[in-house]
Length: 190
Image: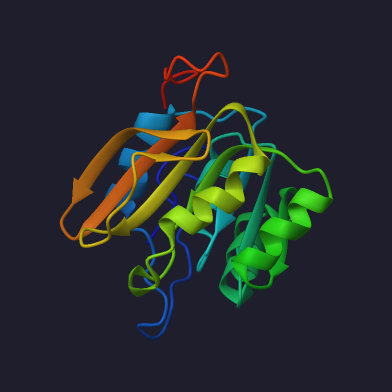
């Protein structure tokens, strides 16, 4: 596992020892960023169920101003951020995702890109989208990784699925804000 592009391109990331953490594969991460756009200059990123921090740290390598990494165990995130020299631009939040979403909302935080890569058995995509919606900047994107067996809705609140990709058993769905005028159009492309 490594950083795919940007300032830390090719640098390795420390991975998990057991099967409790399933990091996003390099090819899936590369595809996600090809869809989002190669560079995230100045954007704020939230990485839910961060595991190793690979998605958030990839975003920082590609120019994101900051990344908040949320997981019950952020030790791998911390080690990887330190090894890459990204610690000043990374906020670690060791807590359940639901609690982090509420805390970030109370703090008035907003993000341009929100990633979520939960354990596939949890099947929490719709619930996570509902909790993440208030934190997303207008024109922002939620990128939800999930198992092919999870039924992911087209619309959650004001978020509409605008793209979906398949990588073996892994699916990645991209959600954007619906047009506030209520005509059902999204406010941009991923």
